[in-house]
Length: 149
Length: 101
Image (cartoon, helix red, strand yellow):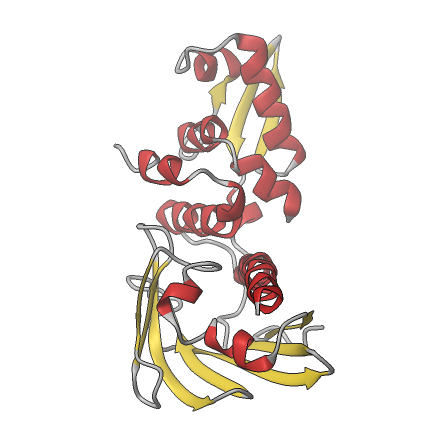
């Protein structure tokens, strides 16, 4: 599933046509159904890609390739994170029709190597990231309540 | 990794993690920060320990806890969790729309 340490890849079959799946990577209203609460998307090569994940963390980069309905590539990184700054990694979504469904081959390249946290603030940052990852099970208001100090 | 995510899904457990982030603290001292019962806090601590997020050390009849930062530092693991979870949501949303067509 993963070719090397700096790459994450994942393949899923989605029971919807490729053009529908494609739109979930370019249309802010549709992206909101699966990722993030606020979006600035300009799906042309060089156009802005910005997703506020939960009010605490925002991912930013730019679109690199936009070829509906087969392939979309954008860069990705976290605002305010020196380890993985905006634009520092690349996300690819490749869509292949399979009957009435679509195979989504998803690749995230250029991830920084795993390492030990060197200081406690870095650690807290990761805790925040994991809260994002677990966001599906987390009631929205709690996320903001967490930053009360 | 799923154990970790489940462990930190609870706001009280996240608060406990913050309390023991810099220094080791006894279970009683941790419980004193919360309005809930001591057994409830013990249970939260057990869940955090099982997820590898805190270490437990006994000193006499006290139990001391401290955050184990290594448990949270794997960039790859968090990215993997992030995308797996979000792509599952994408699938659900796109399939709903596909059916509606």
